[in-house]
Image (tube, rainbow, N blue to C red; front, side):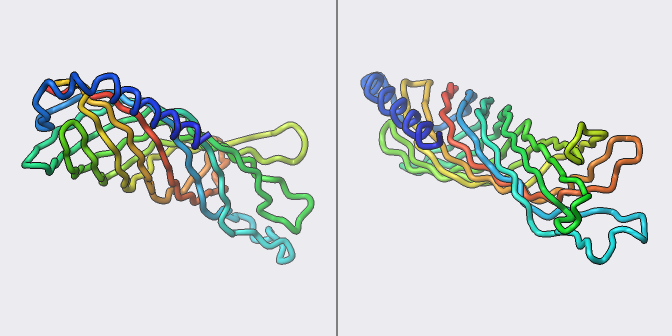
Length: 246
């Protein structure tokens, strides 16, 4: 799927450049100024971290039922789309800029884990995770050659997530709990942007984001608050964007 997305992005960029190159050449190749735009693409990522349990009963767990606190991973992927706003300053062939964006997405995954692997009577923890919103505030530095701009980018990144846990005893679930949080970290990447016309640009961009670790302290509001997933969230995305430059 990722190769298909990358191939589609490359084909779209090449086709657009071929069709509108004369229009771009007719106007000044200036990248300075403010711009707004929209983007769409594909994201894939991983939640990774250990499980833990708040043991309020001194008789449990028994020593032979050791808790498995090793890292557990959940992977997910899905489409994303959103908006961006930014500004560039050009001096010679060097373009400096800043950009803020937000993407709506449904990157989600599922994992089923046995926290007490040596206890056949203990439940599996069925955990669903989902990234709802992903945003960045990044600087950009690029090299412009006529209507073509190559750039690197990096800065702050954040994502709002939700996660649910269901103890699975092999029968109909009796209870579950959830937790919503916001991860904050950084994003780095790069891209290529093409000036379609005096006020329009098209870009293809890759971003890697490490959104940091959060404690998913599951709670159902009625006393279920003992299970935790201490997950670090990393996200990759490929995006195509269209900007209008003022």
